[in-house]
Image (cartoon, rainbow over all chains, first blue to last red; front, side, top):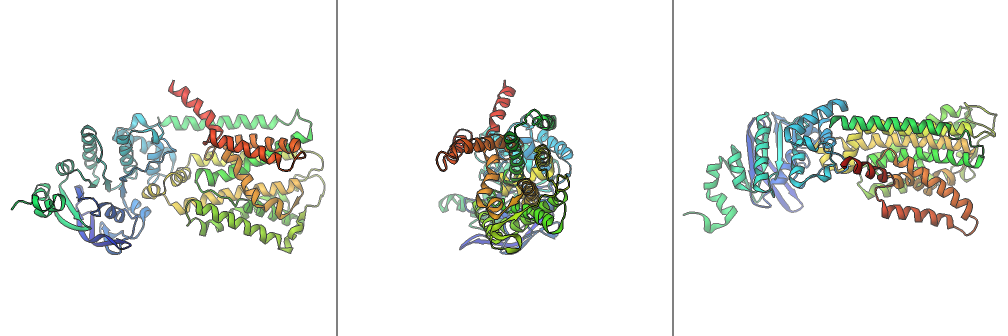
Length: 240
Length: 327
């Protein structure tokens, strides 16, 4: 067990984004985090990556409490993330963007540059290394987010809607990238709307609805679960 | 690809060495004191703007209170000399250290503010410094401090008639600030600072310590600004709160960097090389004709650059290079 979320709750003002969420993530798996808009997926990511502190509950990485320690400590502990709306460093080149991540593990710029070069190669962005980050196409920017996160040598990678809005071909190569990442020994949690893309990829999925865990299970169980169908499609689609 | 960055850095270092060598011989054929003085002021501002650029450009923390560090450096070095006989050649580093320390003190509360609020806070802090010195009798209050002349000496940084020594002092200052920026650009810090400037949330998700980055940038920036203040004080031989701590001075330090290109190695240098002569010439030709006419010209130049080249003057060079690469 790599990550454990225990009874996590987080409210923003009067809005309960996450309520009493508990689940575990096994070493080496790809876990899906799905649910309709506003289910609290990104909010949960923000807690796991240390960007926000949960109001209640705790998050353990390898049995060590990481909730409330802040994003820098979480990055050092081995948690990396991508953002739903890409946040590239637009005044820098693609290589320099990834070097920022690589500096989390390397002191000298020579070492960081070499590590960043390897990651770019892995993510298929090596031909773009010298380009300014702003000039990349949207799917390339998503890849850059992944590359930058991987450069911190994470044990757990959080992907926030990495495949959303891509064409089927682009999404397919994104799926391959995620498989490759897992093959490297990195555990992945991915937030995704597009069920047909996520479900074949993940071993298990956590379904959130209105801030709570609706169900946790294997993809084939989840698509048959009446609660899930109700949450996504409404009552009248539930088979009786 | 990897060599792209290293090659660019080597090219910049070579360019820097060539420019340094050219500037070292530049004043030799110029006998005219007025022009020599103009070059000295330009070099001083190239260094000051680079110091500002280290915090405002690379780290993206816009400070409009740098006069505080400048004035502190000027006062510390001067008072050490006047009251304790401490040689300004060494005292200027004490002045620089005090400038850096003050920048840390200002940064401690103010870096918790983001964006425009930091800039506004620095304006206020700068103004407080000005008022403090204006009403502080020990440091001469509004009357200021004269630096007594004790004969030509490098240790005291005093030269009765010669301009040449100060050419080299200010050149060394500008070169040191430039070299510091060059080192930072290629280091772990430089990457962290630029990441902080571009996107704070992404930066910290990658393990960048945002607050510490800003503090480090502020300390280095404050140090060089204080150093420049100490040199200025010895050069001019007289300081008062108006001349070294006034709010307009904070703007003057930032302007060459803004005009030349923030967050670039050559922006502050190019900006100072354009701005200082324009300001000096417009003052001598237009300053007497009508009040503030020179400042209007100065302001118009900045507006034109801001509209036509928002990335600063150095982007003219960058664009040509990019086009050459694309071809």
